Length: 427
Length: 169
Image 1 (cartoon, each protein chain N blue to C red):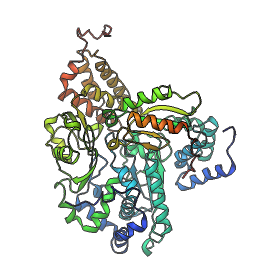
Image 2: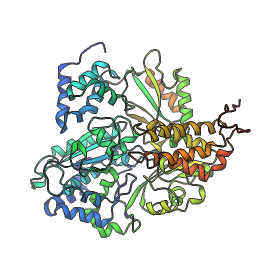
Image 3: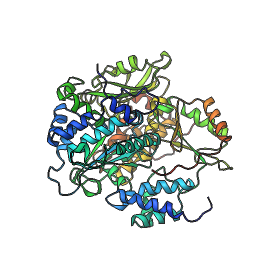
Image 4: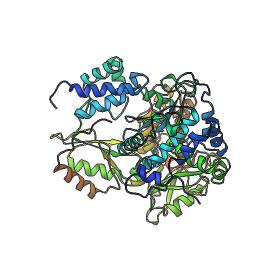
């Protein structure tokens, strides 16, 4: 099994430019700039079957092919480094340890979509990663690997680092664009899609950090090599996160389609203290809870869809047996209530009401009709808003209610009162 | 900091940020970050200045500032502590971390110590799930925490002068 994303993760500080070049970094970018056409890069990435690692799994080459081929003004690459899905910490690792892996991916991707500027939008809390990237960009500028006349080819690329300021919704690509433009991070109605009307009204491709970090290897080794890893529909390796109640939490690079069992038991050393798990979150908060009997699910988009959820970011969180799913779901419902941008009523109200109702169960005051009410809130908000945020808050809620319904029933007030009467309280 | 206005070269630096974007307004978040670094929070005068530099009305700037959790218009502590309360940290004992901080500092989340040295907040996922539980102070992460490590950290910060504000980049 080959590793091409996490080679430098064990190091103390970041891999600096001199050492990175000694390891062959930027040779692929140089070859691309010197000898390929943009369409050839797009085709190679399309043939490789690379799909977006931010959680939506949209084919990257197809996204790039929507970008205009004849330019009447600037196009942009926007790098989504607004990693914020609870359970996810892979992009941070790339940026802190191997900034030049990402930056080489950015150079090649800018070439592919004919962009001269990349805006790298990094979440505000990632100060260390930001500073590492700022230093790496300065190194490149000093070495003539950013700016004009790259590799003597008359092409230019520059990278603008841009810090977010604390808002989960800015990971949604059009919210991110508004935030980059200095506005509230509210998602935009689509169409128009970013490839037509993106950053500052110009054609834009928004791509996740890990996605772009896959690009140099694809161009270096070729799509045939790449497709041999992972699954036929989702090739390549993924930086899986395993956290929560496990012996060795961490970031593990493995082929897509690796089972959750292998990740949790073999790589992360199993449940903490030899205990048992109540559930696991397969790929970040919005993918919800799976019961332990689903542990043999292959971790790829199609297999998890069949299991009733999504791969998301591949950030597994193990929930130990002693924790109640009602309490774990409250962590998520409170999070989504805090993070809804508030512009669409079904989402703003739905996130707030579902959190209040889950809180009622947490206090042991759930009402019989609350279960149906939660389902109605999900029905009334999913697909009714500008972005898919209601799907995100419904992910954990729906899986909690279907897979762990008994836990909610046990947290109901004993003589469940009718909706119109006061809730019973307990000391 | 008692000064009412910002030094000219600092404002010139803010103005220079607007040239990095195709439209001046793109520099809004960088300008607000840089202004907040001066005092630890934003003032109404800061919002007016950000608006002038980006051609945006002050009320519009205010709507931006209030959207993002990292911007604050009330003074925070010299060491603003943010404890992650999301799933991986919670499963690994973040509630004990917060309880230890409440005990050590004598304040609740949302409050500031009387001497202005510390403020405490509970925050959402910091991307530190593999090294949970975690807290951050001005973008510096403290990971794999235990109550003992938290007590040692507070003792160390009590005895230390804060680092000088970093330059905006």
